[in-house]
Length: 240
Image (cartoon, rainbow, N blue to C red; front, side, top):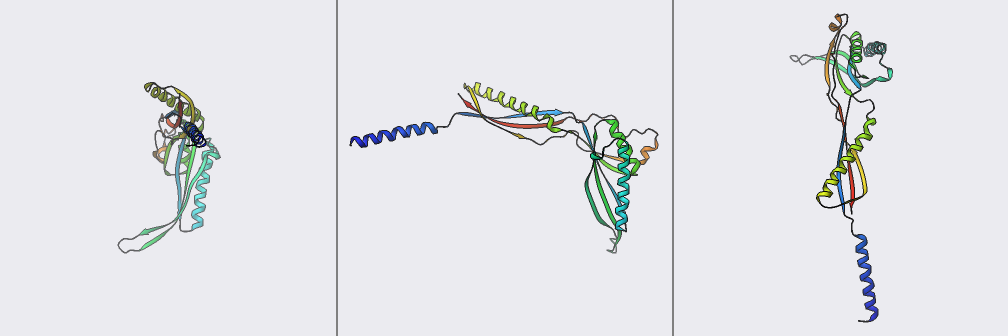
């Protein structure tokens, strides 16, 4: 073999070894950390529906609007801001009465429904004031009461910090058990999990019979469950 061929083979071998060394993947450890915070609810969400039926469509709409306007005035009197009164659904249907013996159906009119959602302070006094205002405007109503957080983003930083602490603790345990030493962090990614609301929805029936007493107490003092917020982080460390 000529000296020139031997020289080329030597150079090729050096380049191959160097390329292999450069492409060798660094040793890493990947850990997922979990962080959560329990937050005291500070708002109560109240939702209910108003409806009106009339053979004349326009009258049905006008009569329902009168109910809604009367209710809104009553709510504002007890301190509910206009910005905290929201329409979540508006529905119009034709109502019929069916005679199953003859197969005939009689038109009863247009039913117009308006679902309203309120957000107020979560204390018992505020909730009872709103209940009284609702029942003064409506003879009977079925509503849902749930609890939430007005600004859930406020606890995000603490939630992420807890997740990172959890991941670091797990990584240190794994490294020590494997007789390894953690190096620098290569990457961090976090994922927000769905918020878990404590207490769920409470269905409550209100009737004007409840207001016969001069000072009605509709809901006794309550202590809504904390709301759990959680997130996960994925962290990759180099191993020294």
